[in-house]
Length: 162
Image 1 (tube, helix red, strand yellow):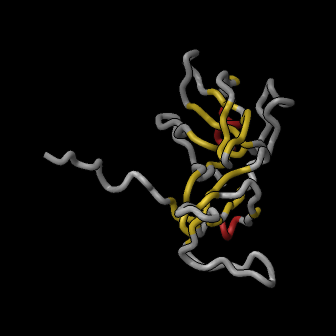
Image 2 (spheres, rainbow, N blue to C red):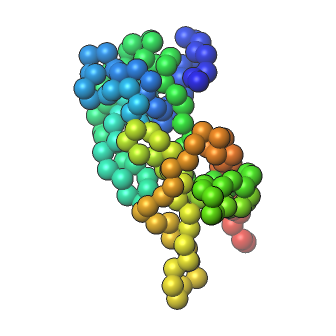
Image 3 (tube, one colour):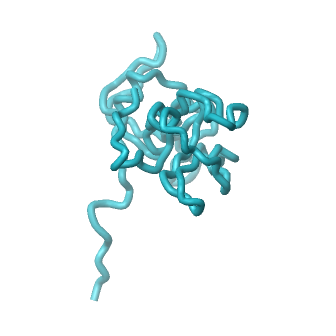
């Protein structure tokens, strides 16, 4: 459910799932579509950007946005977690034979319908590295709520040594 809006405090820029189609652009932006919303633009008003291509489970969005001035459309959009690395807070069972343990590292991505997908790292043979596969696991809302974002920037910028 989308949070309540205050016209003095516009929705933040970020990833959303459309709940309604965008008036005037119903074919391009139907309901249940992944979009990047900007509450500002060079034209002054809010815009939505559509996914263009996906590389390494991360979407690149179109450069030109479609005007999104309809208050009902904006208010109905469902905010999504940013794409990136997450820690699974509690274990879950994706099926009867497997378990994903608490603390597991996962990459969060989405398909064009804005369905969340988890990608689990695999070791790279002969390397001291991991890689995330192109195929992931669709997850239900209960699992989506168990994801804690990992900030790789750390608590502060590194200091220079003298």
